[in-house]
Length: 157
Length: 149
Image 1 (cartoon, chains in turn purple, red):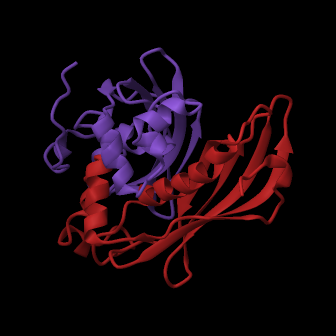
Image 2 (image 1 turned 45 degrees about the vertical axis):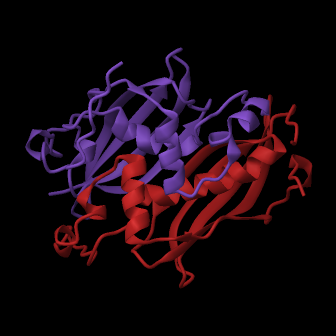
């Protein structure tokens, strides 16, 4: 599968993204399948200082109960952006993350093709701030749930 | 000493890793997470106001806290054959370059359900001033067949 180069300039497609008024709770967000590589896992791990050999050492991981290399549970932080297109409203500059909750089922592994089902679940105004609640489920190529979670974002005005 | 479900009690503490926050660590998290929101990159942008809030400069990703807490929980659970199953967090204060943060867990209760065993953990992250910058709650499962390694 060909993965498109990731656009790191979040201003570039800013005019294409939904603002708070446009976001409709219940409507699915556009998502993209993503092949999770060992390199992407290792880069994410380095960014939070992960040292557990389950993520790095193939021999160690093979002998573990997981039977091979896995990604850390919090890999969904990367997957949220990897599995969504450049015009997704999660990338709107100034989006503030106000908290998240995630449940973990099975680990993601290098080589997995990850898919995401995601939507806004709710939106409201509190203390003059515009909130959107998002919910998300990540699957592997076998249709197994990797993890599911929801979060609150404060939208820029 | 390896943790076991039977030995754990409310009030037991889990110490997490210290993490030095710098412009470089924030940039690395951008690359690791693909979250290039200018909140974490652009000082000029961060001179502006966000509603009533002015951050005064770039801030660390809230999810960097989340990743650190998750790392602490997984590294604590895995040697006991246990599994990090859930984490809920909210952010209390922004974290800036130059800060040093450290997550911590405090066991609040143990529960046995029909098919498994669970430890409920209050989590928090403190900065170098002892201020709480993130808080939340986690669940770790200790399956009956859990084998310490």
